[in-house]
Image (cartoon, rainbow, N blue to C red; front, side, top):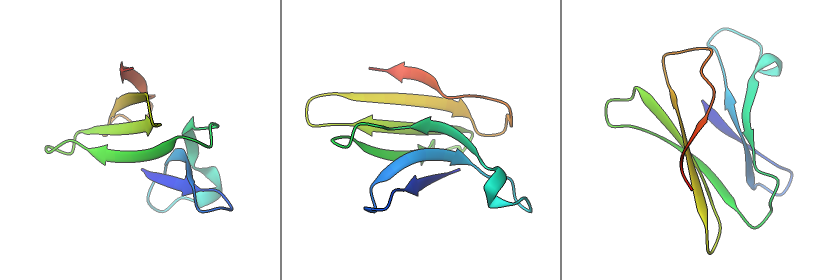
Length: 79
């Protein structure tokens, strides 16, 4: 899992990559279109959950997925 940057070096997409595969085939799990928001990813201390956080000055959203389920999609945890 990684965050892709736009041309202005702003994090805008959360992507899933499989080792040994072509980066062109990476799946976009989340695309932050609001330029006033910052996007980041973190793992739980056990490293079995991936969290994606989209945050602005006055609001934020936290999404999560199972790090070991290759088909899992981000689900809203907190808004």
